[in-house]
Image (cartoon, rainbow, N blue to C red; front, top):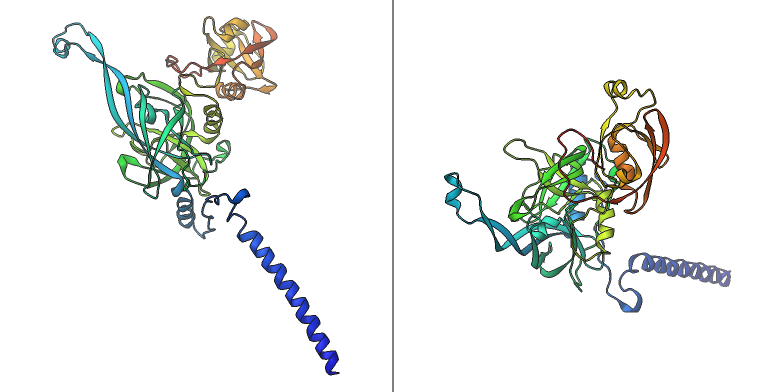
Length: 408
């Protein structure tokens, strides 16, 4: 009997040891996998986990804690050229306005965030060019831990106001931020802006997603030319000078846009604009493949001005077909002109999709690589035809339409 009990105890002890060993192996595999990578490489820095709070306030605080380490300040020294009056007093007395070029050197500050694990940081192009007018000679990146790290410009696209800079061999690099699908955003959902407005470190402002597909004109500082930016995301989260280039995030801490500009604060409040996350990701991929400062937008362009269908347009054109969009103008020598589109044509479809608004066609064209083909279903003077238009790169500086029309 005693021997039997000893054997039972031994068996139970053996089973316990096996279970304990397996548990320790499982714990080690899940908790220490990132202590060292292949070849004893340093561990990757991972984002703080999100907490599932019981309120929106808890979720906002959690999202900020997750994102803040990856948001940076950028201090940039810009060398450029501006035009100044030869005789400023002559203008006061009705004299001729004669200008001459003059070199300038200025200091610009803005925000950005970690984009890739190799040290890539996204920001606005106007942050690194001083308002689209200069070349950066020095870029200093300040991380949330207070460390200053020198960076260099990889590529900037002033046509969409995005730039990629890079810090090399920074062992404490925070994790890249994740992107949300900006096409799934809804008006009224929370939006959190994080950045360095007026050089106030790690500032957080909160608002909501207010609108979509906004077109705004910005730039002109430091000798640059004003530019029109299309398809922006509108938010009520306060965006101030220095916020430019920082992330606009949702309650999950995912980037829904890159903060770009604000409406005139003397005329309106609570109206800020950001570049939507989906557009940012497309352009960022191009920025990794190019070098230096470019003017293009990397967006498809066919060279037409469009307007929505109306009863007046139907009557004037004699068109009784389904909803479509009217070609109001065609840019001479542009892709649409070369393909044979004419003012008064009605476009009803593009690449197999129905189009009922100018924005519908713009969205299709944006999804076509530059040099690709857009197949348009067209009604022209009573005849239906298929028009193949080869896209070119959208010019960075298009004349601003005088009417509410799109220019894809």
